[in-house]
Length: 470
Image (cartoon, rainbow, N blue to C red; front, side):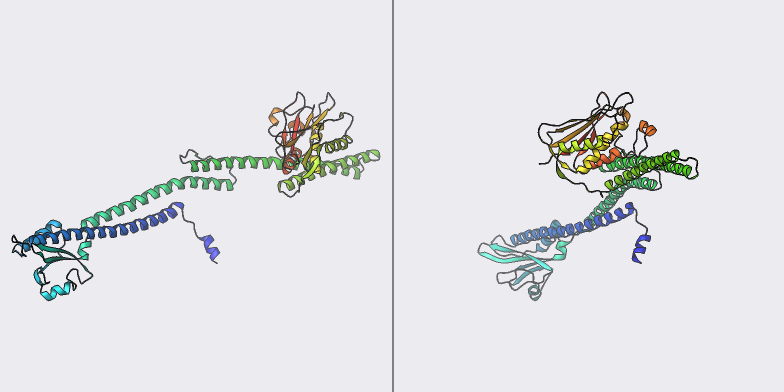
């Protein structure tokens, strides 16, 4: 039930999703920063005001000494305290106490009794008894030593007090930063969402079978530009793949249908008595040849699919190259006619060992030789040359060269593509066009490669590279 609810729940847009989350994160972060900053400002304000309170206590102590060096509480002390409160901008929650040498109360502002004074101060009369107040004390020094002391009490609340104007200004800054952050995130989300929306719309078109996608790839951001360009290229490759798939299916269907139609027509003619005797036997022989051709095409298709899926196992044996090539050429020549000359084999002076699968190597070389026979020129016998050599890169090169009709320049880049067949082969021979593709896959499966070599004056050449055995 929960899974069904998750599937039916409408997804949130990237703009709403990230804007809300980033706004919450930034707002919480700014508020926490504001609280920490506000606390720090309060502590700094309290420390600064306590220093100011200490200066006030010291000034009152200095003014409490007469010209004769004795303690003197003047009538203007109240006015002095009020003036200094306004000058130092200290709060009204302040109490100034002056005591004599024995701790007796001499002066207080506001007025206090001795009992009230001792209730406010600790037993030593140097600090506040209440934790809600802080005290600053200064000794009254005369000619004969300490004459008394001045204690200034001030509440912690007043020491930490921050004017309303400053709180309002600080709050405006926090709100402004939150709005600015939201606007930045909103614009950034829109900037990031637009290319993603375009890609999503293009993906929806591709899923609907429309591969002709055009995206604006002029984004300034490198990552977004690469995303759009890559998606554009992917759409183009998918379109080519779809076209190739359609052509492949049409070609495969045609090539498989042709021998089936021929077999059906030949057998139908024999069964209905249209041909009899030796001619009927000839028709049956042709039908068998067509069945063998059909079997080969189906086998090629199955082998290609198996190899591309990684099902076919390839061995990596240590093989001596020269005897293997000699045996392959000997067996192949037995199946050829007189219009094919004896293949020429060039071998190195020293023994050469390579690593691969002898059966797969035979498949590749026989396929190359058969392709040369199919490309035989009409005005001359086919001459084949095989050359074995070692390369400095640690591989063995087997070059197969013929003097046939060659490969058209326009087809040189396509001959290894699956189901590709040149125009000449399409008009003369029937097949699926998987021989060279299958051969290259086999070579790569053995850790080597199969490439088209440099074009000789007549015919063509292929180079099979396989790793040397240690």
